[in-house]
Length: 513
Image (cartoon, rainbow, N blue to C red; front, top):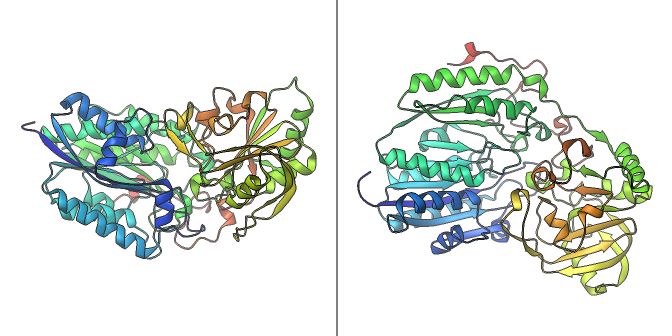
């Protein structure tokens, strides 16, 4: 690798749920909208708020090249909490901002794109492909371009063609974002030394429900990813196996196997087909298993009455803000309240109007809490109960567990409410409950709780596992924008037939061109 290398940094991060409200500039500004030197500053902070993949990329480059041995050229990086399709006007503005900021940098030797890969826009199924094509058009055909992707990415032909490598996460919950950014840096260094990546993709007619995509031992998706990692060698640079994101509802939805080799396209194809075959052999395992709401209320009631039994976590995967849910459905809250559940914590409930009402009542004040007074989503049903304000907070903290560990988190103004047997963390910036930090940061003690309800699909597991083994976690089957029961939705664009929606879906290696 001759000479000091100059590397552009950019990215667009959105997971789009077609059934959720559209996503605007405001949504990104609430989460992450960084340009220029602020990207670099955040990437090197002890407790950053920026995507961990960027931190991993910078760390490897700094460690291997020295801070003076490479030149970072940060352009623009934006992220939103998962929402609906991005608005056309804003996305067009963003593409122009990306194009102009990259062009203003002048010549670069490489580009790292920190991307999600699961976005849609109101005018296109493939805004991620548009981002990749803009990058390629600006920097030219010969500059190495490497993207990291969430494993919920849906991959298009345009995405495949525009970048040299797409490196997907290997863990769900996503606790390896830093490591994948580091891997992207190491792969780019290989390219600077003359390695030419070649890749091949195989798509399966499988759209896995969210709760079947865990990567811990014994889960089919994790087993497939681990099988892929055993194939890495001198010929194979990276194996990425993406589960996809069902709620994007696009023609490119699928589980996707991508094999990157060191200038060996034939081996990339053969290995990708072998891994796809292994994945399809287990497709029947991708069926969700949840408990009913009535069963959840009964279990929570019993555990609240018997302190000698282990405490439990109840997950609400159908209202996961990490998948486009609003984070404010009241099905579990209402059922637990009506059942007289005691010793329960609920985190986190998105309702800015309720936070304002609690602030007016003041710490220690009592009032009639009215939930969802400003939401008109079909699943954001009203609920009210007498409440006491336990505390009021600015909503910022540094996480200690799971995906929040070491990260600066901002939930906006927060109120904690006591509804009798249930204590709730109410937030102003919509996010999922990633860890016990989302409770303990606001004066609630997860260790003392008899039951905990989390608005999250699965990422919370990494932040609760030190207290709650899988046997004490139950996913509850309730309505919502992110319900794992895929038959609940009116799909428009999913390629059919697709498993598990269509039991007759078929695949074998002869179908690969």
